[in-house]
Length: 142
Image (tube, rainbow, N blue to C red):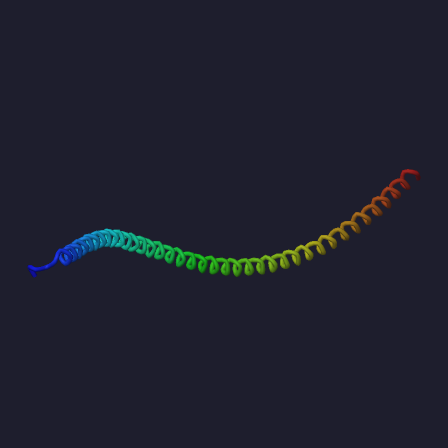
């Protein structure tokens, strides 16, 4: 080994120098990869935070959706109950109206009968008064 030629020595030195430079470059690449890995870890952490926030928001939306479904069910139930109550009340009102109109018809018939009776009474009264006046006038003339 001592007997190496200049050419061999320079080749070995050149090879060592290239090896050292290559190691330096690999070290630089390793440092940059570590930096990139650190950044990816930060991004992964942020994505985990975002995912957790989305899960929380999704949970809230599911709660809101369940509340909306519950409210819709209550509204449908209440509307159905109101419709039933309205139908019942309308039926009662119709019955009351029929009863009232029947009573009014009966009262109108009775009033017509009373009016006819009053008309007859007044007519007989006028005839009686006329006869009385004629009789009274006849006594006065005689």
